[in-house]
Image (cartoon, helix red, strand yellow):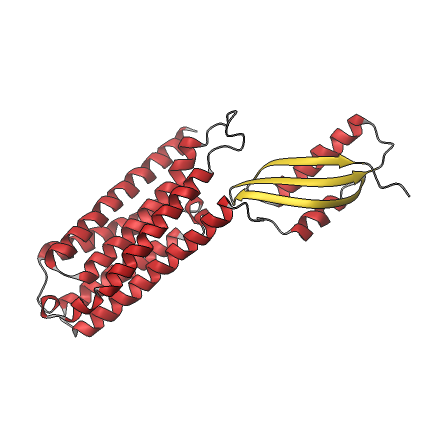
Length: 282
């Protein structure tokens, strides 16, 4: 437990510093009028905020349920993520409208040394996070944060080299557009995932659930399979038909078997609600 707490604390600190550097990159890019540096900052800021929201918000607000929130508070992280993604989509559209400025003479000048220092610090921190911090739990947000961090490293290095060797401004413009499109793609992924969670979209394949439940001894049929929640916090609601002659204790054993098999087979299931029904009369 202490190791897990220390691990979470390290990850929180690393991501917090990563976000601060991202904000500095946005400020430096704005001050030096280099849009490409601004975009790398926005991309890094998005990665850091979403990672924090999907890992630390649930750990804070989903520790227990109450009378008004019997399913917990984890949907709040999806709601927050939805707003964040929409904000970044709007920001991406605005930045895209300003991309033509990267062709101007202001970007043909050699940037201040602080720009390279910020990009280098960001790359070093990203590599450290990838190496020492587990990002598996972050990937449940619908995007791979490990891959997103690698993209951030790649674009930071690429843009720094482009600025240093003074390649044509058109190349820098293309790199900027590409990074904006990548950021928009990630934002859309978050919007889709968050909407699915908030609108209680089906999270598991119904045929697979039915097949598994029907294989349990004592069950004649399984139907009305409903699942909702986030990938790491699923709630399953099913109806099963059993022999009308079984006793209550036997029915309880069947319910426990169903819950045990579902949680063993499918990851992320928090609760299973089983409706026991007698077979139809013939």
